Length: 162
Image (cartoon, rainbow, N blue to C red; front, side):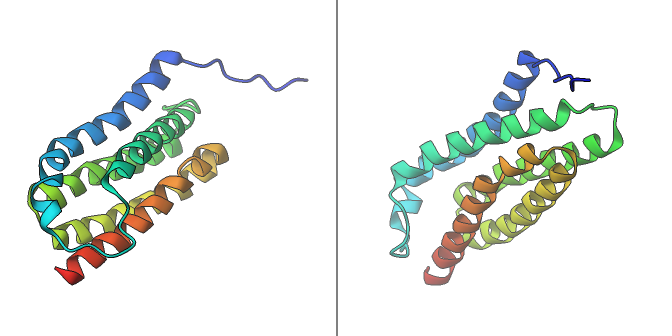
């Protein structure tokens, strides 16, 4: 007996990708004005990437996050583990947008650092919960936690030297 693969719900897949990119859009409202202003005046560590790197990296990560969230939703939103996993996903998405508001909007590397530590923890919890439901969905979040790990180190360094 062949395993029946679920049919792709393109509307929901696109909705998840858009939802994740909305977190990025919200963050960019606070980020873009600060890049050439406040952020440009900060001392940064030698490992700080050029500003142009962030856009393509985050666009790719939001795309992968959207696919990941969709793969979990596809397993059945009526199932309690799926709803719990998507609640964690939503929480980390909220923290993702909040980081930009705190770091760039409030111009606070300290508040950003506190937020990014919570963000990292919620991404880790999301990966763990996704892994129990769909391993591919969990693996799609690995580049995200890797980048946020780097961003946390960068955030700490900016806070420490400023």
